Length: 295
Image (tube, rainbow, N blue to C red; front, top):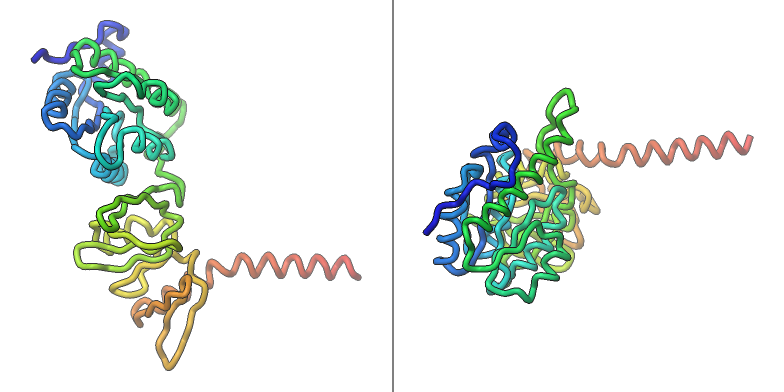
């Protein structure tokens, strides 16, 4: 097996040095031998600092989300096309909805999907078996892609933090009866604790993710999710009613009535009032304007 070669097309050593051993890449292939070969070649390239290899698209998507949450987004994804379940083209479509999609290099034994792959704005298309020289060219393209993104941010006085997806744009893989579905964060009405898992409820159904409620609460707080009970996390934008019956507080979300514990009741009231206040203020301003026009 030949080690990955530095790209001879790159500019001088000062430009190569800017990204030497800094790239973070993800390799996805359901065939273990092919994945091992690809990971070996990628780790041999002097511009790549970290390589993670996974055998399915769902695990890949989870890894990409973890990397973003840790402030270390993946610089590129090397992706097989024909895989059981969610294939490489399906995953590429999901990634295209990210606020900043990572560059994709397809790695496959088949030429037929090439047109569709480039319609998905793939950075490169490699045929198996992968040659080290050809792989180095792909890494070269990734280098320039990353440098171009960095050069846009350089004029700023202070470097901006890595951009996070817009609220509602995050896509979460959930399991339901052996099927993986992908739902948008904005469509989640509430979350229910299930041991080591959490059940995400939407208007059309629900699905499980392997995550603790405390972690989801911290992760999705900025998207308007708030804890109301040890077993429930709710999206404030989906709360339809706040009920007080026989001294017990509850919320109505799409017909589901969820209890609110005493320790969370006051905070929930404050948040709901704060969300409603701008609407009330706008309505009052409109009413005052109409009254002035009538006098």
